Image (cartoon, rainbow, N blue to C red; front, side, top):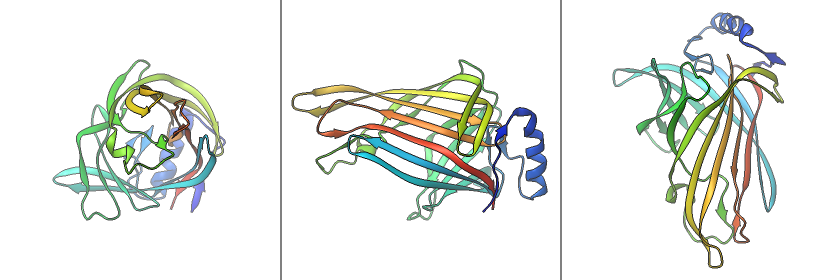
Length: 241
C-alpha cells in the first residue's frame, strides 16, 4: 500500500490533498473533507482493547471502493479487511450510513432509518442520534447471549470541538472535529448487583482531508462476572491503493 502519512495535517493542506487525490485518479472529491469517500483511499488503524483480563491488539484496515448507483441513488462503499461493506450517501445535511453487507451476504442490508455519520458543516453544539450496542462489555461466563444483538440503545452525539489537535502514530492532526457520543445501557448484571445503568461513551476525532484519526469507546462496570473497559482505534497510515 502506497501511503500519505502526514505528520501535521491542517485545513490549509486540504486543498493540496484534493489535488493529490485527483492526480491519482478516482472520485477524489467524494464525501466531505472530514469523511472522504474517494475511490482507492485506504486507512490502517491500530486497535487496542483493555479490560480486566488484560490488553489485546489488532490492526484494522479499510479501503474506499468509490461511488456506484444503487436503486437510482449514488452510494459510496467502504470495505474492511474482513470483507464487510459499509454503504454511505452524501446530501446537503451531511454523510449518512445507509447499509451494510457482511461477507456471507449477497446484498447489503439497509439501515432503517439511515444513520448520520457527520453533518456537512459541523459546528460546536450540533447534535444527532443513532443506535449503538456494547463493543467491550461481555460476560466472563458464557450464557449464550450475543450482547451486540441483545442490547441496542440510542446514543446521543454532540460536536464538542472543531479545532482539536490529536497525535496518533500517523502524525499530528490539527483542526479536528471531536464528537462525543453518550448512551445508557440498562441491563441485569448479576445477583448481588442486580439491574444497573451502564454508561457507553464514544469519542471520535475527524481530521480534514483524512477522516477518522482516533476513536475511543469506554464501557465500564464494577462486576467480577463481566469484562468491561476501553476500545481505542488510532490511525497508523492513510493513503491510496
